[in-house]
Length: 529
Image (tube, rainbow, N blue to C red; front, side, top):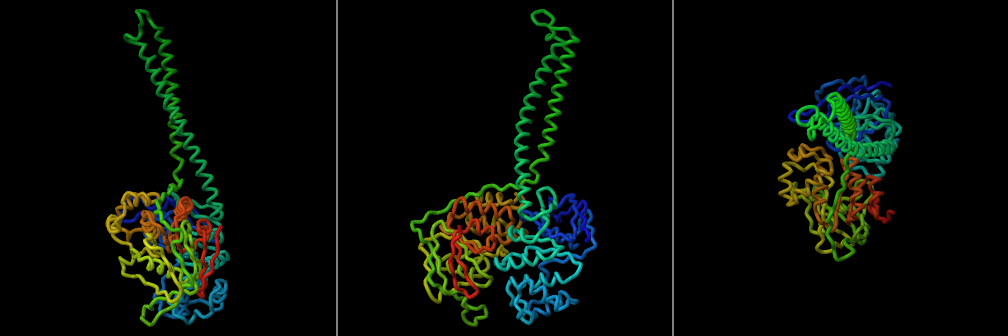
């Protein structure tokens, strides 16, 4: 076991007015399994790149381990998978690779398939297996759960539980709880390291935040009382001091008191005033130490539109297909799909990657005549064909959509607001509550982190007074604190939602119905409590 020592680390991007990290110091052991937690845009990926030596910085980072980054770059994805493995780990032993692959419950037929034909889940599992083949390497694993279905997430979680020596960036609470033993958190002021999983860290954070908030309120009252007392003591002391000389030394032609007595009385009054002011300054200093790392989770508000019917969307034994990109006919992606979406439902489509969940959302959008913003921008929108069954969408439904991908966002935020014809004040209020600083509003969207881009889409959706909110993996890249804010919003307002999401904790809290699509593309319904 060795250590990674970070001492007085300071870093900022060229042209930026703010430091990303300022005088940060901590130590970690290379045998630990660290979950890396922090708000979007706080610098998690930046810190991993600092460990990799990609940026210059002030301070020191000392360690005798070699860092590896996930996801690692695959130079040619058309190569066979086994060739990709040989390129990434030239000294690997095939039996060791097979052992790791068995832990990840991978299929045996992947080795001689082109790497690009592997699913997102298969690519993630393979790259993790290859990286863990490298002995004495410390892994920096950056958001491996994005786009992974629940089943694959559980497999990867169990795999990482067997390992040690990594920093894992993830916003999935259940996933973190299952595979880490320490938390590395980027707070508003610095970075801290604590032992435990996410749940224990969160419990301690809530307790600490509650204590600081209570102390803050107590000190505010004390400071107000001490300020009033100090002003009163100052008035008394000044009044007594004024009787020593001049006309205030006499009242009605008689001397008020001996000069020495008045001087002593004035001195005591001044001393009392100074003591009160010192106590006030001490309270102010104590107050300034509080709330520096309390994360604001302001309540989000939503205005939904009313609709005259209860049943909004209905699918009866629907089979969907879409035209292959190479023009080689139609590909069936979903069959036997049945569900009902009623007002107040939060219906979650669940199933393995590739079973047609996003295709179902696209079919509903097409049936409602809605064109997603990303399709307007990029021209990319595959319209599924209904081969069998009936998909009915009530007429006149206003739908608000959040796409799975936010990478297409670019340009100035002001231009985006104008193009989308949304209320600028409301939109920015949502972004501020989702932890956007005012300085972010002046940046171009291509400079945003992936999580910040996704928040732009979510804030834009929340600006709509819609009948149905259709969200496709809305939590990809979204930090834990914002996930909790969205949970509370949905629970408070119960908008009608059709959603694809793989965050187990989120789905269990907000979902009212689950429709499971199997790999064979048949559906089955279940209810959530």
